[in-house]
Amino acid sequence: MTNDATDAGWFRGLDSGDLHAARDAIENGSADAPVDWPTQAVDAGFADDEDDYYSLLHDATVNAAREAVRKRERADDQQLKHSIRAMADCERTANELAERVAEWGGSRYGEGGSGVGYARRIAEGEVGGGDRALRGMAERVVAVSEEADDLRAYVERTAPAVAPNLSALAGPVLAARLISLAGGLDSLAKKPSGTVQVLGAEDALFAHLRGGAPSPKHGIIFTHEYVSGTRREDRGSAARALAGKLTIAARIDHYSGDRRPGLERELDERIERIRSRGGEGE
Image (cartoon, rainbow, N blue to C red):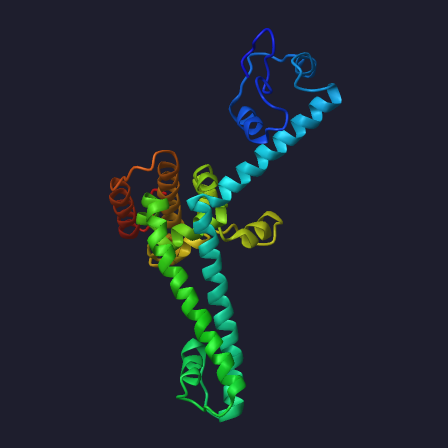
């Protein structure tokens, strides 16, 4: 809001019913110093009285907040968050239903099996075939599993475009999981590396804070080969090194977006030193 002597304020030049223009004024305006805005709004003819001013201001700010939420939810990183969560839901559901199909199939046909593969054999008529209900369930297991595969393919295509450096270091799926756990790329970029290191290990962290368990050394980043593939005694060092580079990558992706291949080389060299020296110097 610029401070004009006559009708300054976020409401300057606005129709009181134009929420779109009011939202833009609220989001982009500024003022050098506090002013008696209700009085100026009444004097400018924007509001009938002080109560009317605050009612109009309430409508404008609510509309601005609603639009900000809508834009955030449509952002690419939020779409990536939703897709990775949907993929995890489909994988979990397919595996749980596959267990039910295996129990049912074993009791029906006397032939053991497990997992989505066994459900697929029933769905395709390779096993049994006389029980329509069981076969229908098996077909649904296969369909949900294939949906999970499609979502994984979408994540693998999308993550490198949303977070190129993070995806290069972590892989598209782990990058998407980190973004999802943080709530978005902007939130991930603002977290310290120590927090990134234990994302996904919240239960273990809370148990530690309550005094009943050791501090977790890593969260979801354990799935990265540089952590899981390192000697147990050196995994803490590897997790710290990886988390540090992932944090830098997320910040670059969020604030500039330019590709930095040097991050990968630096991480490779750091992990090699940790593995060759047993983490000395950490």
